[in-house]
Image 1: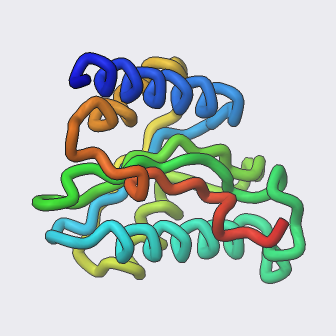
Image 2: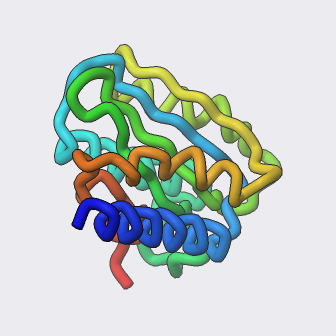
Length: 155
C-alpha cells in the first residue's frame, strides 16, 4: 500500500511539473511571511499579491483582462508548520518598463510587513518545477498547498 501511495505522489508531482512547463513561466518567485502561518491565510495573501501585481502592470481595469494577459502560474506552499512560504512559477504580463523583482518585493512587503521575497528568471522550467514540488512526495503533503493564480480570476 505504501509503495502505491509513493507512486501516486510521484505521478502527481510529475503532472505538476508538466503543467508548469505548459504555463511557460518567466519568473521563479518565493514569498515568505517570516512567521508561522496557515495554508488558508497564505493562499489569501497569494491572491492579493497577484491582484496587486496585475493592477500595477496592467492598470486599474486588470480584472477585465483575459487570463493570458495577467499574472498567472502556480504556487506550492511549504513548511506549513514552521516558516511558511510559497514557491511560485509565474508568467507575468510583458511590460519592459516594470522592474518585476522590485515590484514583487514592494507589494509583498505591503501585505506582510516583515515578509521576504526571492525573484529569479527561469532558465530551466522542469528543474525549478521539480524543486517547487519536492514536498509533494511527503506523506503530510496536502492538496491545499497548491495554489493556481487563475483561481482568483473571473473566467
